[in-house]
Length: 220
Image 1 (cartoon, rainbow, N blue to C red):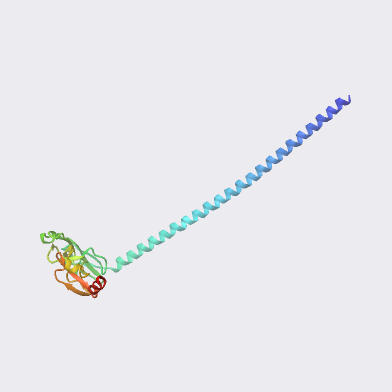
Image 2: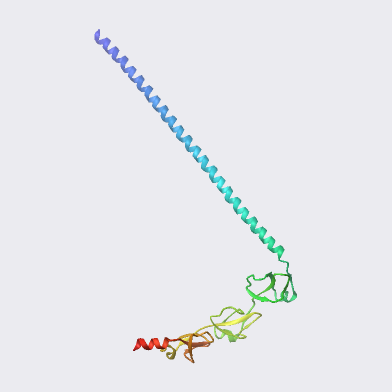
């Protein structure tokens, strides 16, 4: 009889323990879900704030670009309005265009080709190379342009054209032995020029001041 009572008490205690354990597990699960919901809510809020911030920044950038384009367009309209040019026949016959004085012109500036304050006529470069230029491996360019070599008169046909023959010089011993160097004929030489010291059209030998003495001193 006592054994049955003890077993009965033990079963009641086991049931109570299991019930308490289930209750604890339920509470623990509920707390985790609450914490998880809290973290998810914070993450959602942060994402929303980032999205709003990026959207605002994008709008500001778009507005800045728009303002820049508007200012540029206003400036171009003001320039166009201020520049009131009338093309003259002398410019028109050569397919020239009127532009603001001082603007870059890939060709020749024709004096008095446009009427109006601050206007100039720009005539595009249309050159035809002549045999005299071609034989020396020259090329045509706008008159007055820099030429690293010799400018050949009448080497190109066309208004505002000139022939530039690149410098192809060969130094001779008479120049090299005196520490000289070759340069285009007519170039400035801070020293003395040796006649026929360089071989090639448009070439001259230049010996700088004291260059000859320096060589002699080192060879002694």
